[in-house]
Image (cartoon, rainbow, N blue to C red; front, side, top):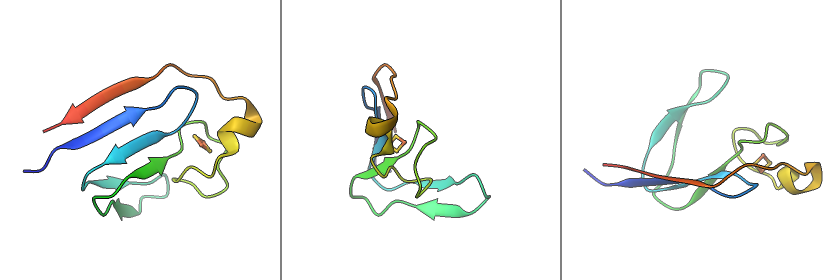
Length: 70
Ligand code: FES
């Protein structure tokens, strides 16, 4: 099984590195392709569940966290 690395960047999105399946807020199943995907954690993205860079404009602040799922 491939590892998936999830990084909550400082003051920014979750970066998903690896193949993963998740369910968005509307209940739709989403899949990552194995390349890096940025998911919004600030709540301001106009393209949820993906980050569109709005966290910078809104001044979102949060501590970084790193997690590896095996
Ligand atoms: S984390 Fe980037 S728009 Fe929300």
